[in-house]
Image 1 (cartoon, rainbow, N blue to C red):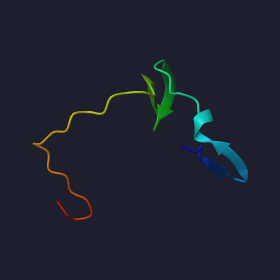
Image 2 (cartoon, one colour; image 1 turned 135 degrees about the vertical axis):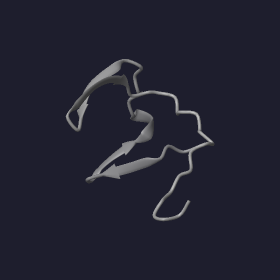
Image 3 (cartoon, helix red, strand yellow; image 1 turned 120 degrees about the horizontal axis):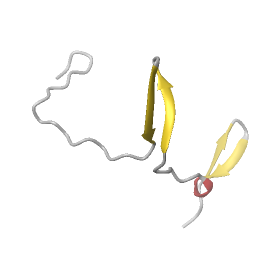
Image 4 (tube, rainbow, N blue to C red; image 1 turned 180 degrees about the vertical axis):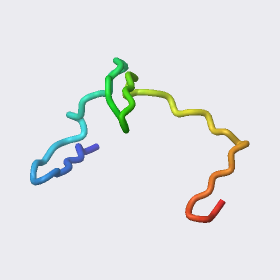
Length: 58
């Protein structure tokens, strides 16, 4: 298996060198509201009672 190299703005890098996401909370502000939560989190469970609409289609 080969290592995939990507290029960003002319700089080549390998995904193997990417930093692992920490479980430590990170303080940040979004639209004026302050949050402190981990970047790593579990996806929310799907809610079958909610009907989603996207560009006029259900």
